[in-house]
Amino acid sequence: MDQKSPNMTVEYVGEDVIVATLVDEKILEESQIQALESSFLPLIEENNPAKLVVDFSNVRFLTSSVLGLLIRLSKKIYEAGGILRLCGIQPKIYEIFKITRLDKVFDIYPTREEALEGLV
Amino acid sequence: MAKNLRSSRRKLELTSTMEAAERLCSELLEEAKEKGFEEEDLFAIHLALEEAFVNSIQHGNHSDPSKKVYVEYSITPQRFEISIADEGPGFDPGTLPDPRMPENLCKTSGRGVLLIRSFMDEVEYNSKGNQIRMVKFKRAGVPSKGQRG
Image (spheres, rainbow over the protein chains, first blue to last red):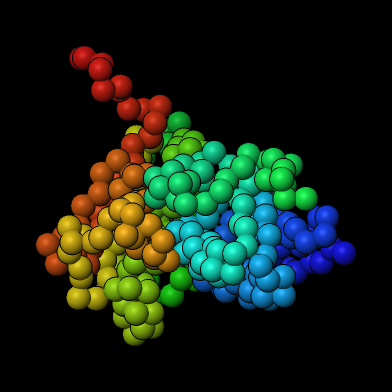
């Protein structure tokens, strides 16, 4: 079953893997961050422990607020023994992860297919 | 060509809202693009502007609409320079925790200044710490460091 919210497309792969594809090209406003958090939290709570893949392939620009959101989500997921993987991150945005050393914190895969390996 | 060689230096006062900052960001990026800045530099400038405005408006002025953000900028075909000041008490950027240290790595905030310093070529604060000045040189217009005159 696939679901759509204004800021992400949610797809269930296999039995219990959630692939959330971010829709917006730019994620920078506080309202966008809050909307994303409101979309992610029920997904994580309803699928506990969650196996979540977040696909960034549509995203061309983001700010450090998004990193904060990802850390909040990862804490919830990891505390419950779940899995969080990121994929499709454009090179310039990947640089943001590298500079902040969050490339060492998050499991980042080049493509959605690679992110799904071993999960489905 | 004549238009591109002209420098523009402007002073503005913004209300402390991210909407006002977003409008200005769009104008500044458009102007930088007209001056020949390319995508990679525009990404860097955009990121630095967003992070600096969040710091000024949300952390400096606490989003108080009665407080202003003071902007002065100059964009030439060689360099993008901007200073952004708020009415807050300021902070000492030297005492900010390094978000890359293991104990800070999973904190949910505190990365804006690191990103500004990483993506811009010159970054400095005034002594009070409520004004940032930052410069980005156009990539193609800057002689390489090894080049001699």
